[in-house]
Image (cartoon, rainbow, N blue to C red; front, side, top):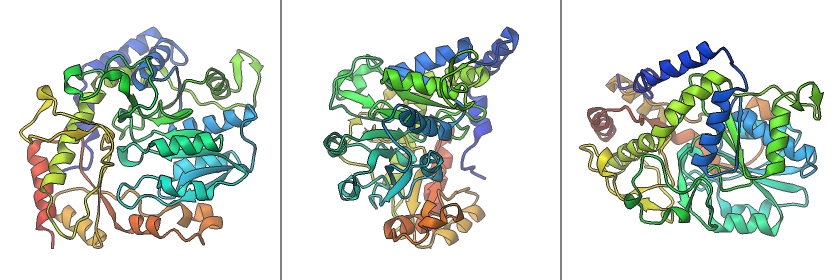
Length: 412
């Protein structure tokens, strides 16, 4: 069986460093708000290219905390509106409604599955305060048009970067912090100078990140982070996440308990330096799929052609011999579409390939959001009826990749 994601194999690939990191924390005897969290926050902020990183309990909390902080700061008020893609994972929307804000669901681009930015402006009202962009499946959702809309209407842009840690887009602003180089990648392999690109998670006013074990940068349990370059926002988020307190027993806000623990931080510190190399391996696999899956019943994913590309990294090439890659996609998921989705999934299971559905029910059709059940969102509903995710991860062998493509091509 070719597993969809072999977390055990990925974990073993980081040994003995993971065990040594855990042992270091255990022997130190300090498990919350200690050296490991502080060090990871600095390292991840530098990697992303933001001024601040606040470790939190999970990705949902990261988004919840951003919105809650904006409410505390008076930037957003209850019942205000937040634009969000209709086909996102439900956590994006849960963060909005948990803060008693109104989600305004907008259809995705049918080709990239990301928010259709051209539809945003027609949904803006006097109560719109923010746009939550979701870099779905690992592909950056960003454009100059998005920035112009946000500036025109004085809107905050919040990135849901849960699936896209490491994705890169061309910069419209020159930043210097954390962008002198990209770890694990040689400068000569990039077509543009380091000063001209930015990572997702540093593009908007704030970003939420998830380190759920199945993510490209995954911990060994739930964990997440917020990144931002806004000093006030960072301070408020850090306080709210710690019971609303920035000084022990002094509570400025009605806060939460949402903190990254020392063991997970230590694990993430081991994994972060290899993230770009792991993402590059995923790009190799994705390129092979794109080049070699030829079944007319299958709709392959598309990449925004305006994003950056880089030549293959010689030190990481496998026998797949990939072509230049779109750096804007880190391929957290490789999602195909077909009218025969359920039959294909069963066929692949019989063939020995595990494929999953991300996601079978769109948020507006969930019982949890029965007030949204009558919305007419045909693109979103079509996507959720047809999508199927193929195995893709950094520990797949070339043989497994070939077998998956062959299985898809043999499907009738």
